Amino acid sequence: MVPTAPVPRVLLAEDDPVSARYLAEALALLGAVVETRADGPAALALATAERFDLLLLDLGLPGLDGRGVLQALRARSDAASREARAIATSAATPSVAELTRAGFDGLLRKPATIEQLAAALHRRPPGLAAPQAADGPPVLDDAAALAALGSFDAVADLRRLLAAELPMQVDTLRRALAAGDAAGARAILHRLHASTRFCGAAALAAAGTHLQAALEGGDAAAPEAALARLQGAADGYIAEVSR
Image (cartoon, rainbow, N blue to C red; front, top):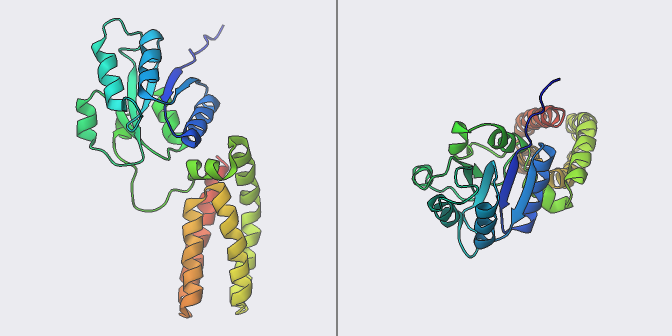
């Protein structure tokens, strides 16, 4: 008989309802059992009473921030989750060195991707300590999509729909530009912009905005380069959604 892997238990301490919902649903999809608390004292009380494999502690929790929760938990010899891995979550860029000194095993920048959450859940994440690269928008912004649609299932369905339609949309856009139909191209971009917002397709949205600016700028060569960027973003989006 193949042994069954233990189900990881996660304490998610997050006061923002949208972020909490997204993170809890995403972690559940990854196979975790998740308990959520919206303030520091409640998170500390639960971590003291029950054993968790992973603590995701928001650095801006009300009542007692994530650093305070972890410090108090580590100081209690009788706390059930005293030795649990702890990862700080933040939309800002705090000092990784300071977080390490505070006892955290890593930093998860918000909005976090499914891949980052999986890495945090299933292994000790040395690479998680580095802040998310700021060299461009992510392919998928999960928190933005969830904020727009309110349901992780709805986000997934709409993302698949956009992935199926994108090749035709990009081809229609290319033909409109080749025919000099700037108005038609702008209409396609307008529809695409709405879809990217709902899907949290951040890189694709940025590429569409870039092409829109190129059309408005009047440089005959600019739209061609911007269209190539849009094609690359579309390919990246389809690949990511199809994984």
